[in-house]
Image (tube, rainbow, N blue to C red; front, side):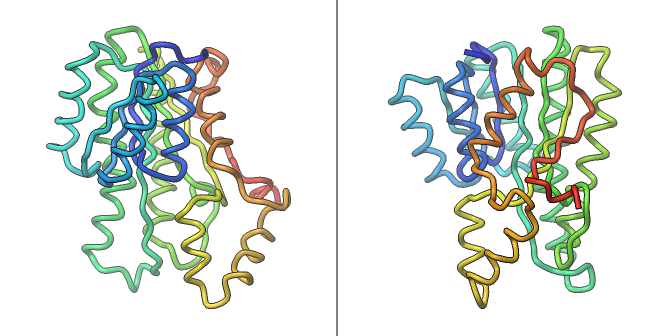
Length: 253
């Protein structure tokens, strides 16, 4: 096991990439604390992982809330005095231009996608520093690297996450803390399937998305999770401040 006893926090854990992260990290020996607002799905994942003999705890929390974040860390402290890995995976997206977005939508978008990275990193870095290091992985997006139309706040938040990752990596390398960002494009999740189903012509939308990927398919969430295991393990110990396009050739054009 690559991550035996590496205590791990995963935000946005109740579905899609987050659920795969929980599955794969638990399988590799990491005690996993799963953070999400979706209590129903989160509890199901927790129960399934525990039934399989893994160490897993669900923490219901709004990742943009400082009070909820404090409660997550209090819960972890009941079981462990260290944290080795943080994956800032929580995200949401509004489909809107900057002219169409309301202030409330902007604040929520930045709160979930960016403020959460601050809240969890701000609290975990001193804990990691005390034990001589750790690993933070931010789940960005291909839109951390390229723009797309109609998702102004989402693109802004994911681009901001890229800059924050680089700054954190430089600020905390002396404490043994590595910080990287993965930048997935199309990933076959239930949310992606729902987005296809709500398009005026679902098959046309599927074909359009696939055409953006020279590799000819979307990624499976487990592929993203397996790569994060590599980054969090000793095998990835040379990487920090790096943006990894997980995009099937999307940005190679």
